[in-house]
Image (cartoon, rainbow, N blue to C red; front, side, top):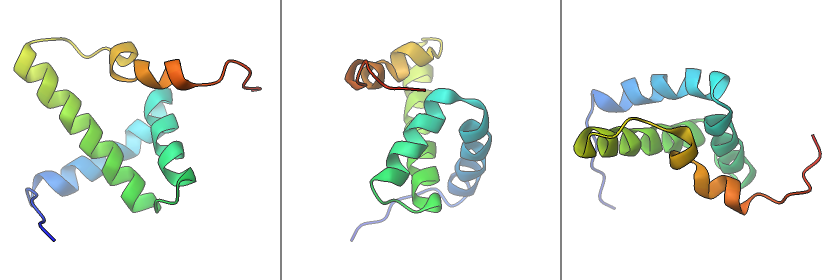
Length: 85
């Protein structure tokens, strides 16, 4: 098994995921979806952090501003229309 990670970025990204889960509805839905498929809290948080690092890299590389509707737009398209709140 190949493991590649930055030993400083990994803990920082994990800590970055915690407020995202609390304050971003899109991040929270991603985290909840990962938990539903069986991920532990740590694994789901790490997955969320990795996703946001990818989005950050994309924004920095292309010069685009972060837009949640673009970043999580594919999730809204797949969501059933009859979800009860």
